[in-house]
Image (cartoon, rainbow over all chains, first blue to last red; front, side):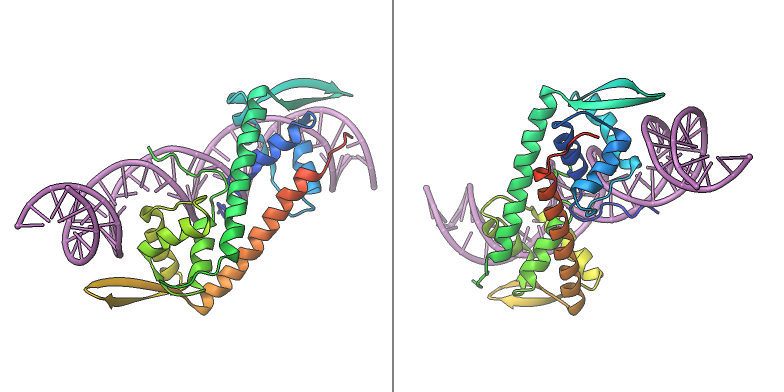
Length: 113
Length: 113
DNA sequence: CTAAAATACCTAGAACCAAAAAGTAAATAT
DNA sequence: ATATTTACTTTTTGGTTCTAGGTATTTTAG
């Protein structure tokens, strides 16, 4: 079933992950909840989105992982690399471009011919 | 080939088409240029994006088409239906939700624990 | 007059990425 | 004791944009 590609979500998980992880290191399950928190419940990304994204970003060298034992539990903490911050900057700029363009297209009254 | 899905573009062609065509009827090739125009060159959608999108929206009942002879040339003009305007309203609301959520996530300083 | 450019439409193929759904296992709360 | 929460993982799916072609007509330029 998989109601896929909901409008306007392409690139959003990556942007949010890089944003949050450039502030401080976090682990997957924590990110799932933080994203709901910081977006005021407007965006909810499940673990099936978060974990694969983290793996891909790590593989791409944008994130680094380290295992930490917290109490009795072991967690995998992620944080951004230099490459990741560069990628974040590029994403932010893409985002602004699209956002502003859509805003423009809404104002512009398009007269015929 | 086909460097696909540049970030943040999912839903954008559909939104732009419905927006423009709810103002006045236009034909495919015209839409290609109008989109560049109203977005200040920030978004450029090729004919390979526009035409399939138009067909899909027409098939979904969001647009209606009519052939018009303009001078010696025949063009296919599209305009929104009631269903299309409803769909546009839903898309606009989705867009605002995501846009505001991303804005929020940028401000929010996320303190640990 | 002829060649090039612009107009107008169309299609095929693929790659990408978010989403759903399920499952494992340990820790904590009831 | 058992149910819930925590934490991580994988597999499959399918929707949607994109690139890259192609056709044919009309207009502009040399």
